[in-house]
Image (cartoon, rainbow, N blue to C red; front, top):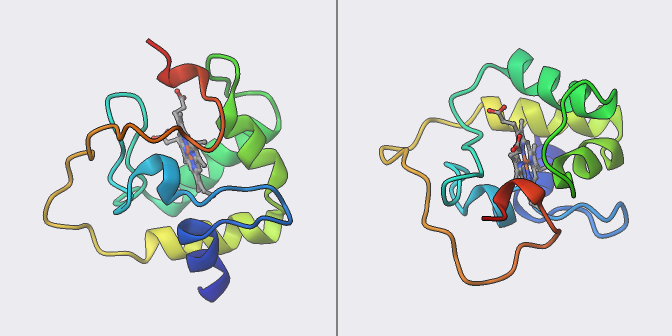
Length: 113
Ligand code: HEC
């Protein structure tokens, strides 16, 4: 759980993985119109999405930042971050936070107009 929380909120510089919160919003309910929330989802579903990015079965518009995040995460870290995410209570406000002016930590094709 501790490792999962670190990945979600701080990321891992050594593995070149930004915090999930930097893109999915500070409370992980999504950011703007194109970055979905990560809370309230079944753990199996979230693991399946990360696995599909690793095996090229799920693709987003290039540059596919989530494919890079999923491939840089060791399998044990996928377990850790998904375990932590699925243990979080759903916040009262589940709306995505507005897109902030600050640049995303990686280029994401899905977010481009
Ligand atoms: C650089 C920005 C960025 C970072 C960092 C990031 N994500 Fe994402 N994530 C995205 C974008 C953009 C999408 C939407 C991709 C698409 O269009 O399919 C996404 C989608 C997802 C989805 C698919 C959700 C669904 O409903 O299908 C999951 C799961 C996910 N991210 C997990 C994570 C986790 C876990 C972390 C942290 C380890 C993380 N992401 C870090 C940008 C990011």
